[in-house]
Image (cartoon, rainbow, N blue to C red; front, side, top):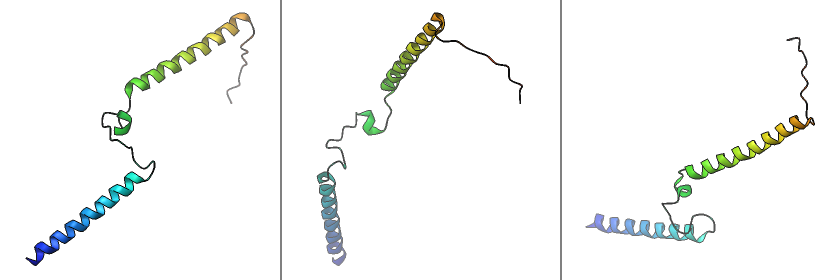
Length: 89
């Protein structure tokens, strides 16, 4: 009978400590999200493939416009390429 009382007391203390810990965790600003949204990929640590692909497309568009500008500079004669011979050392 003594062990059951001891077990109940220990379990009660653990429950109180867990409740206090949870309350302190939720009360501190910025420590945890307010709502647990498992469907959000960023929260779950899963990369968003669609967003990554869109970023790649945007970067390719930027690169393409820079290449077009460089081609126009070469065609207009404003940019030139000068080659020199290196001696290989």
